[in-house]
Length: 67
Image: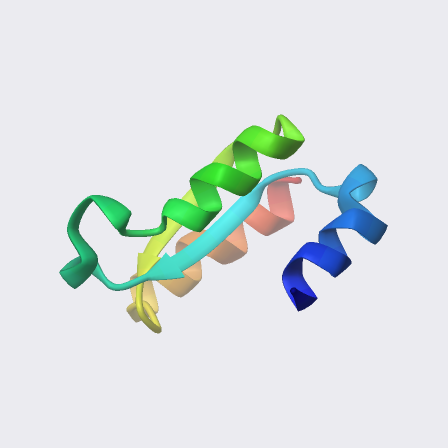
């Protein structure tokens, strides 16, 4: 509910979604990010496994700095 409340209050400012998940969930991996991106008509910019790798973190920094 906290995420939904936050998005309801701030969704107009959303530029894109970066989401983490666990690939052990198969097709549900990062599904929340896809749902949010669709609901707010923004791109899902990056999907990362759990905490991510150092490479993931660098890629995410690049994405954020280009927005």
